[in-house]
Length: 376
Image (cartoon, rainbow, N blue to C red; front, side, top):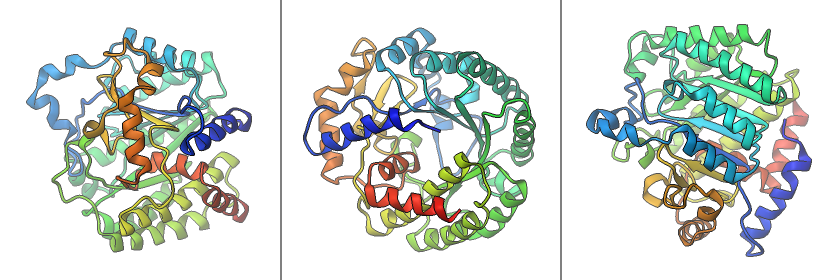
């Protein structure tokens, strides 16, 4: 849980800034794609092709000294999302988490995984949990194996035979770890694409029986971060809306009696689903977007983006060019230009991570979240 006393001043500042008053302040949500290495061969993403085409590019990823300088320049964030590629392919992932705990002091750390390197993930998750225990045992760690279908259909979508069994092996291990680490949140997540959108009831039934602490899904997007701009991966608005109706029924039916953190998280997801449908159907921002204000995304090479959907196409700049000073880049003319374009509504997307922050900063949507919590 994020204490209101820490987040309210930032929310007020973000709202004022979007009205043209004061500066942007520092983001409360940072996503860091720690690597573009990946063993998956997903139909929805082509990150895995990057280093096969250009092996030398892998040497350009930030090292620990650079990461520490960046984190030290930022100050506190509340949510630290680790992304990839496959995050667990960085052998120094626990050290990155340690630096984040020291300099960013987040309330929540979230790590997705393709679950292919089972023993490695088990070992490194234990190392990360011990880092958090030493640094701040109140930090909530969420680890999310990706589950895009059931059985061999998941393997087909992810391009690796046997992937489904590895997902379940990692998930079962996470559930076991919770006995010793109550701050661990064992999650499952699905990318809803043109290839699985019609099979959502089957996937949802399986997830319900697996009983994760929470379940998140988001629509497959074409974006430069994933090098998939030409791929027909996104379901139609009608397909997605039908799939989401099923998730909404499932989530509401099984949200009662959950711990507060899970009920609140699920309430945000229920509101997000409605916004995602509207973004796809109306092709506009359904509520004001605070990308580049409340949220920042850092890619493996130290570029800062307002969000991963804009990605390489609308980078705010490289932290290496700013001597690793996040605050200087965040206030740069390039950053101001990107924010201006977002504010003018030149882009729209159903990106889940940003949508949750937008909900928090939009009164009517936040009221809907509170209603969902009350219902549960």
